[in-house]
Image (cartoon, rainbow, N blue to C red):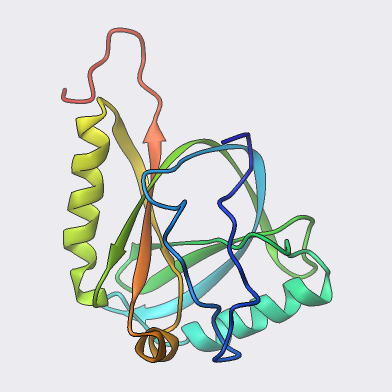
Length: 179
């Protein structure tokens, strides 16, 4: 994939009028290359990694992106991570700056892996993604997850797809991912 390009995401397939239906084709084992890729950052509050205000934060952020006309028509990506048990960080891919939001640019190599099932499998998915990256002779710098639908839409669609996205650690010459 070319720099800053994402797999397509058909946002028009949206019978719930909330989250578009996710199709995992083209997302699994995809190598993403970001070169100053622009994201709008949002933060949620959590208790032991369980988000408390995710619906409100996502709604407000999506509205701000739409108001700024900063969303892409054929792609969609939110990188979510938990820097602590009390806080979640979410990076919304955008095409231009979004007023009143911290903007973040990412540069690096990333590898995706699609999972399906309940959120309680998150730690198992993280370990599986780590193993996939290690099997390729690489190391993980940071792990993000892309929650493709909210819990209500996942229930409606009968599938809860989550994409693990490993930010790859650049290896120095002679360094092994297994050190």
